[in-house]
Image 1: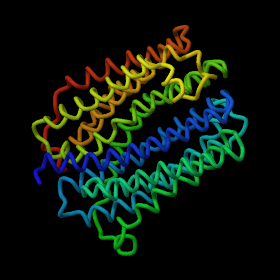
Image 2 (image 1 turned 180 degrees about the vertical axis):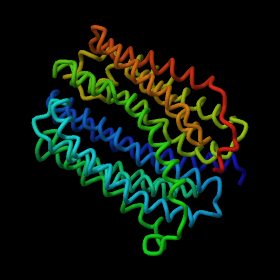
Image 3 (image 1 turned 120 degrees about the vertical axis):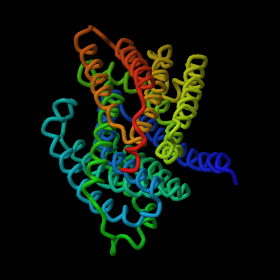
Image 4 (image 1 turned 45 degrees about the horizontal axis):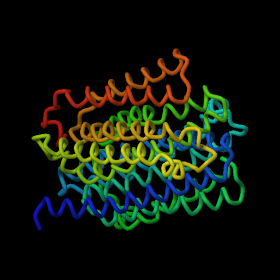
Length: 401
């Protein structure tokens, strides 16, 4: 089987798994949108934004693990040992920090209780462990195992989250279900750790920690950028308008997450590629998928409205294409961020934080409402993608370090 054919087959497998995960998460979000009043939905979407930001440590660990195994597969056993030790410490730390942030986040998000933020912290413990497992599978190109992890993540959230909101239609109940469901992918990934949990081989933790922290920093900046408007809307808009914006963000997240299988499958190739051809093909694939999403939303706004929660959100039907465009552009930025991580190039962090600052300044100095805020995100994501694309490449000598 040729490399191209193998990659296509692998891409199909992972795409199916990630699509299944994203569909399950999306179905849960729509179920929550139908069960919750707009104010509670706004709170839940903001809390999901907190999870996305907190999950950057998991993704940083995944990227560092996958890169190290991909460029030196013969050292796989020696990579996994320090990965497990670092992951255990990171999961505990991230979960505790997010839970403690409830003192600040509860008033910022206008929550009635600190429990939803505490539950977000508890959710991040298994999600961080999942990052290590996914990195091992991704770097080893064990696509079946990676697919199982992704599917378990989506199904866990769908089953337990939907059950929770059915019992009690509140954001707090939804977070209880999400926290329980987050352990499903950990269980699915346990076979990858067979022989490593009880007898992990020694390896250098310091270099791995540096790379994981660098990757997490870049991903933190990215996910702050991609989640910031949800937090701004929750803090700046009236509850009903924030709820409408939250409904639109369901489409943004769908357009953002749908092409992410591309970055997962090509990441090992990006880490080994010295020509940057893989980057061009990956970006082209993401742009193509985004174009389809935006065109479909613009042509079929009433169908898109059904997908974001139904008639109670009809006020934003004619603007849903803007949310799809925002998600598609953020997906392009996403693949460029992972290309930088694969090349061990972290200079992109400064640009990402600059984009975050631009969104904040524009949102709070201009008299923007729903349309204005999503337009700001579109403009900033477009500019960022163009600038990052034309940045000079990093030396390939860094890749094996």
